[in-house]
Length: 500
Image 1 (tube, one colour):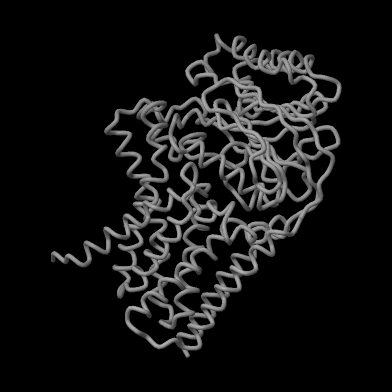
Image 2 (image 1 turned 135 degrees about the horizontal axis):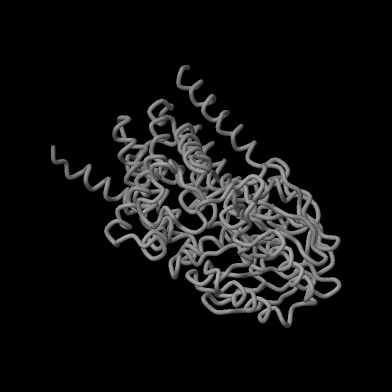
């Protein structure tokens, strides 16, 4: 039956969801995320049935992901060679899947008490649950977390303690409390003690944040010189075996003035050695190492084939004064491996992308060494996994992430990816070096601020000073475990109050 009010509410939820990505890079209009979640809280806390809860959340999620992951279309159409209609259809299926995954937990609101403090806490807890779940299904898609926009905000002081997921919880709590206050004002509801407690909790969160921002969680070491090479090699050339030597020469030429830097970084799969014999691969590495200065550590990505186990690996290795090897653990569905491979492989070019045959590395791996420094690696997409990066950072002095965002063209994807690296630096209080094929390449300090960055789509050698750090933040020590405990506590607390 046609219901104008419901159509209006669902349209409002769709628009509210679409505003969230505008609070993230490259737009960074943080105010919009507060407006968005306040509107969403106001709408969903009015829902009376499980069906209404799900549909409202589904509309919000559709808006959120349709705008936020629009860059997936570029990968499927431009590089997967799917037709525009097919690429749009596949992107929309992905959007609707993520929206449904986001919407399902909101049914839990039906079972929570109707008091103001319970509703605010449960809204924030379900928001946290909806984001946390997304980080695990199909190896996870920890993207578009609202906390990733809080690098400079009234809540940024909480990042080294709770991480971006925890800051998202606080953000949602603030917005739910504001929505309830607006609703109470409209209905002229008398302010009760539980409502005053909710307001007091929000005020305490806001007051504590700037005080926490002043704390130095880690200790600065002596500065070093770092160089990052952005070769800007087109994808169609990068995987052409006939152009392997020419592509290597581009890297060597760009590195000409950086051979004596303390750390030199080449991007993901800078050395595509998978089709070479082990002898030829070793000769290539030896040739590259011969250019390095006596105190220089080269950290570079490479794609290799393990002939013993007959599998491909996406690796990062250290050369010169650098030591160690890291194999990517978290793989991108359809980008690095194909779920249901027997059914999908070969249907369209997208399912046969050059890197979609990768095998994941062991869960526990040692850090790389760069001289006396310990380097934690997050390979491409892995930088989005806050818990993994935080735990890896504990005994490291800096983080290095290498990527190839060429797959996403001139979309917002690479900018979102770079902002996530900034958040990881703030959460761990460790500097981050981010090397890419065509941008955004950059040096990020231990507070998440950009020290130096490259222009996209330009071959660049970026050189800067970097200050390594030792020590750990609370989030690096605990990871997301306290957030899981918080979820359990809120639901038990609320259900207990409901039964009483």
